[in-house]
Each structure stands twice: as structure tokens, then as C-alpha cells.
Image 1 (tube, rainbow, N blue to C red):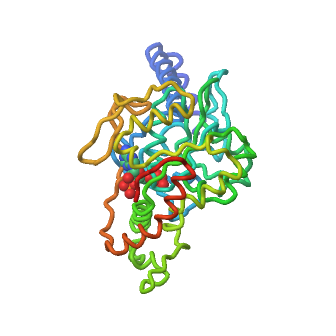
Image 2 (cartoon, rainbow, N blue to C red):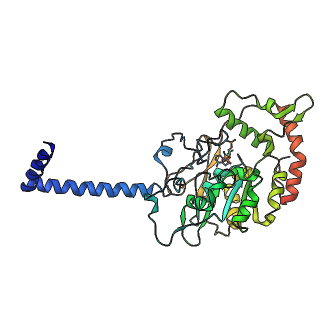
Length: 359
Ligand SMILES: Nc1ncnc2c1ncn2[C@@H]1O[C@H](COP(=O)(O)OS(=O)(=O)O)[C@@H](OP(=O)(O)O)[C@H]1O
């Protein structure tokens, strides 16, 4: 019954010239729409802002591709899911279109830390450079996903032309004991970048992020101490532990010469983004293309923003998970932490040959 209805319908269409034309046009239109759909699918793997971001919606996709860890800034904004590559854990048929001269390469430079240092800002600023292609999400390969192998890691990377630098950022590498040996085993020539920030403000920023996800946690003041009466700091608390930069750096220097590590000041990245970007471009052996012309200071946000981010003509600031308002912390506790970090900071200045001015 249905079959004969279909046949009758087809006969009416085929033997009526007007309907035939209409039928033909609708087939062509469908084909054209399908091709457009494919192209959009492909384009979504290219650098471009997602509509959600333009509308300011908080994305739920994590920068961490696999893990559901509470400490990662899951709604991290500027946007790890933008563009380049979300790292296809399943085969990505549409994203396999590419010109023959482009290929996926392992990163030649990695932003290895530090958490809450300003790593997202640095990566997004770098992406403006035509010779940089970076994966937006944090791959967490050298800490959580190492068992997946280098093939998996390479597959997460965006395609690059000869001469372009592939990059990624995963701030937890800096404090991962195994990361230096693993990165060295991938390539001992990998350039490493660490964005550092006053360890006390960094700790408060870290705590603020956790608090935004778990409002019931104890206060910063409580978590800071093992014993508040004696003033004994709890160095097992990750918010405190991460700020022991000299200690973590030691592990990296077992595998890499200091000249292969660039230390970017998180504070100066806000105060003078073009100045810090000049240092970064020099370190990566790139032409200084990112200059003060690329930035403007957004007074509402309180941060420098890009006039024209990569893949967009609209000015853009990082989203609301960057630049959160920190809670007021007891100044006595802040002072205790400053005193605690001072010798470690001093050691770090000696090791790097840079005074970051935190004391
Ligand atoms: N241009 C610009 N815009 C917004 N925010 C900026 C910028 N430059 C640096 N920062 C500082 O970056 C801090 C977040 O650091 P990360 O991106 O490394 O955080 S994360 O580890 O990836 O979660 C974030 O910390 P909080 O202010 O504590 O939220 C910012 O102070």
C-alpha cells in the first residue's frame, strides 16, 4: 500500500514538467544544504568563536578532556573548546579534511604552569600569532593521560604548516613529578614556558576557584594551617604546595637546562601584556607580531583584552572564570604566608635570575 502510494507519487512528479522541475530543484537544494553542513562541521574544528561564547554562556565542557576533577576550571572560557581542536577521542571524520601540506605534530613548546598563573591569557594571546597553532583544551597528557601514548597526544593537536609551532597548555605539569622525564623523552628540545604569580595571591585564586564549585569548604584561613596557634603552614594543601616554585623547578632542571625554560610574570602579563609577549615571541624564535596594538585595557573587567583574537574580528576578554573576586582573607594569615614563602621565592629568583618582586 505504502509502496504503491510512493510509486504513484513518483510517477506524478516525473511526468509533470513543473513538478519534475520542483523535485529536481529540491534535490539540488538538499544536496547543497548537506554540503554546507559538512563545511560547517569542518569549520567547527578550525579556530573560531563558538556562538555560546559570543553569547557569554558558560560552557560546561572541561579543559580537561577526560577527567572530572573538581580542581579544573571546567567552565574556563576564552575558550578551550573554541576552535582548533577538542581532541577527538572518537574518530573525527569531518575534521580530517585538510590541505596536504598540513599535518599534526607533537608540541614543540608547552605552557607547563602554573595553575592560576595566567596560563589561559598567555595561550590566547599567543594564538594571535600566525605561526602558532595551539590546542585549546588542556590535554593533561603528561600527568593523567600518559598511558594513552604519543599517538593519542599527537592526534589532539591542530594541523600545522611547515614552520608553524604547535603548542598546548596544562598548568598541572609543573607540579607533576613524572612530567619532566616524560616531556624530555618526547623531545629534549621542547621549549617550556611557566607563568608564575605571587604564590600568596595564586593560593587565594586557587581557593576562590574551588570555593566557586564547592561553597561548603572550610575557610582559606582554616585550610592554610596545620596548627594555627603555632603558625604551622599546611604544605600538603595543594593551594600552598603549588607555590613552592623553587622546589618544583628543581625537578625540571634535572632534565632541561634553564635556558630552555621561560618564566613569564603573571603580574606583568596583566600590567604590560605586549612587553611580556615580546619576551615570549623572542624565546619561541618568532617574529614580534603581537604588540601593544593588539591589546586594550578593559576597565570593567580589570584586565587587558585582545582587540582581535585569532579567528575573530571582535574584541574579546577572558570569560568570567578569570578574574573572579577573591574573598577577603585575614591579613595576619596573608602575612604568615608571605613569611613562609619568602625563602622559597628568594631561591626561585636565584635559580631563574629574575626578581619577580613578590616580597
Ligand atoms: N588578560 C587577562 N584576563 C583575565 N585574567 C587574566 C588575564 N591575565 C592574567 N589573568 C589571570 O589569570 C588567572 C587565571 O590563571 P590561569 O588561566 O592560569 O588559570 S587556570 O589554571 O587555567 O585555571 C586569573 O586569576 P583570578 O584573577 O584569580 O581569577 C587572572 O588574574
